[in-house]
Amino acid sequence: MAASTQSAVLSGAKVVLPTGIVAGGRVIVDGERIAGSAAPDTPVTDLAGHWIVPGFVDMHNHGGGGASFTSGTAEEVLKGVRTHREHGTTTLVASTVTGELDELARRAGLLAELTQQGEIAGVHFEGPFINACRKGAHKAELLRDPDPAEVRKLVDSAHGAARMVTLATELPGGLDSVRLLAEHGVIAAIGHTDATYDQTRRAIDAGATVATHLYNAMPGLEHRAPGPIAALLEDERITVELINDGTHLHPAMLELAFHHAGAHRVALITDAMDAAGFGDGTYHLGPLEVEVKDGVARLVEGGSIAGSTLTLDTAFRRAVTVDKLPVESVVQAISANPAKLIGLYDQVGSLEPGKYADLVVLDAEFGLKGVMRRGEWIVKPGA
Image 1 (cartoon, one colour):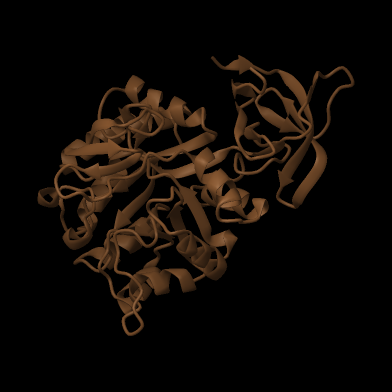
Image 2 (cartoon, helix red, strand yellow):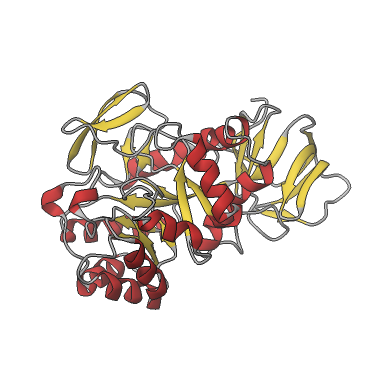
């Protein structure tokens, strides 16, 4: 149960700001927003020995808590959203998977309503405009080339809530679809692709700005055929998504991306499906059956990895404790960068006066202890 906070001073923690880490800092909350000063009688919460970081922003997420964003009612979608909020994700873009175009358009309408209500931050269409040879957990029979008219139909069906479309840009219509998306202010993301290095470069020049889960569902690096990975890592115009769950990526590949692209060009995502925060068992990702065992989701037929069961608090903790990345770099990748990409950095993604009071409290070992969203405790420290 969320506990309302009208005004408060959160004091004594290490606070991660855009300018660096402030030891023994404080965050002032006034209603839904972060304030620059507090009245003398404002209640003080002592968080000495903790960290305060901005609320996490997940721009690629298919569900959680046993609920899928690709099917079910609005209340079921909200169940998944609440699950991720409890793990620190205060801003979330709901991702779909490959389906019939009319079905996806109807789904986008429901998700658009939740966007207008402020529950989610928009819609990401992953498929059906992807390459069959890199389909991963997408149904092959429903895949299609990225016809710009059909891409436009999906974008329009979201009534202004479309944030991103993942495309295999080497397919017929791919570059024209990238240009269309760029013209309409929607992120064109390169993913589930079999593109060459040169084809990927052309897509970036056309306006693509994101790499959907870099390394996964695309050709690997080769010394004579560098493929899409090299093109995506080297270009300053591209932000690369990374799934840091210990299954999708070897730590060396995570380090390679942070080192080569820089923290300012990384977005940590979950690519979560409905088992996230819920447990092992049998689920569905769109029309496909998924078996989750020991926290790893794989298709029942074929065994491909089918999204993740990751939550962003785990991704944060792994990045700092396993991968040994600087806290400031992880905060940039898990909050600021995705907020900028989806056009919400004026509201979320950093701890600055005037922005929403969205924050996460972590203990000294980076375990989650508190989550505040818009001035309300979703998880209250010490509760």
